[in-house]
Each structure stands twice: as C-alpha cells, then as structure tokens.
Image (cartoon, rainbow, N blue to C red; front, top):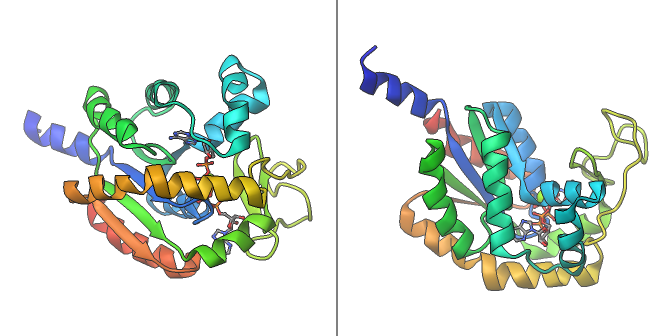
Length: 229
Ligand code: AP5
Ligand code: MG
C-alpha cells in the first residue's frame, strides 16, 4: 500500500470524539451505547477523578473538595491527567472523551495535544436535554464506583436491587448528587462549559441532538457518527 494510503487507513482507524451536555443529560449512559455500537473506548474525566478519590491518591486528595462542592478542577490538573490517560490507556482505536474538555482553555490544549498522539478531533456530540427531566434522574442515580457503571432506579435499574450487574458489588450514591451541589454543577456548566459549544460550532464538528430519552437521542447520535466509520 502506498504510504499516503496507509496513513489514511491508520487515521481512519483512530477516530476521536467528544460528548458534551449538562450534568445528568445522559453522557455516561449514551457513551456506553456509542462504545458498544462503534467499538469505541470511553474516557470519562469524572469517572477517572472519582477513581483517584476512591483509591486515595495524591491527585484524589487534591480534588475531593472540588468535586464535593460541584466546582471545576483546575485546568492544569485536568490537562495533565487527560494527557496521561490518552497516552497510557489508549493504544490506537477509537476514543470518546466524556467530560473533557470543559473549558475553552482545556479545548485549546486538546487541539494542540491530539496531533502529538497522531489524532485529530472528528466530531463533538452535544446532548440538549430539557432541564426539568434531569433533576428527577439525579435523585434516582446509583453508581458502581470502581467501574463508573450508572443505574437509575426507574430507567435502568440493576438486576438485583443495590448491586452492580457485573460484579455484584454494592452500588453507592455520588456525593455530588445532592440537589444543592447539582444546582452548582448546572451553574458551572452554563457559565463555563456552554461557551465551548460556540467554540466547536466554529470548527464545523458540532452535532447537537435534542431529546428527553436515550431511545430518542441514540438513533440521532448513531446517524451522525455512522458516516465517520
Ligand atoms: P462528571 O462526572 O463529568 O459529571 P457531570 O458532567 O456533572 O455529568 P454526570 O456524570 O452527572 O451526568 P451524565 O451526563 O454522565 O449523565 P448519566 O448518564 O449519568 O464530573 C463530575 C465532577 O468532576 C465535576 O463537577 C468537576 O468537579 C469534575 N470534572 C470532571 N471533568 C472535569 C474537567 N474536564 N474540568 C474540570 N473539572 C472536571 O445520567 C444521569 C442519570 O440519568 C443516570 O441515573 C442515568 O441512568 C439516568 N438516565 C440517563 N438517560 C436517561 C433517560 N433517557 N431516561 C431516564 N433516565 C436516564
Ligand atoms: Mg457522567
């Protein structure tokens, strides 16, 4: 195969996507469906941070209070963390980033970093879900902290109440899933993360999908991503 054709095939085999949307919009839930459908590895910045907190690492200790209050972790910490994740845990193949970038500064950093790992951004999926349906979901959310698997008591309950489907381990509530902290996370999203949509709209990569349920949203997401595979 000619070198340019080989490079084109290699580039095609390494798609890089982002999923954005306000807290509770279903990023984690829909990421799982995207991952299963397109064989994509998902990196969720929130899950990675919660894993550090659970393991009691130095990084975990530094970010515990920020997550508990619903604030955003410093850009410098986040870009360093996600660079390492992309280098250490992604060896070729497609990647979906959930929760990163979340500020224009993080987005600019990602744009500079991706070419260094021979990637480029292929699409940004943004979930537009009415806020009134989201608060109820958060009340019903339970997670398996070690894996990040998410359940909802009314929408996708675990097979055995209170236990993870795969490991059987106990489910827990996220400490930032109180109504008060959730309000702060929403505020941060509107003030700091929402402006990123304009940034990505200008790149021509933004795909916004509106809907209230995953069954309504997923076919739209699938149709938007399919041409890239
Ligand atoms: P992160 O973990 O990213 O939280 P988030 O953006 O607030 O989003 P969530 O995980 O709460 O919601 P989701 O959209 O994934 O929804 P889910 O699928 O679970 O970040 C947490 C914290 O980490 C931040 O506050 C910040 O401090 C820090 N952080 C992370 N990244 C950072 C960064 N880049 N920079 C700085 N700080 C950073 O769905 C929600 C619930 O709804 C679930 O129970 C689910 O089962 C249910 N559900 C989903 N879809 C449906 C449906 N269709 N119908 C009914 N229920 C549904
Ligand atoms: Mg999530």
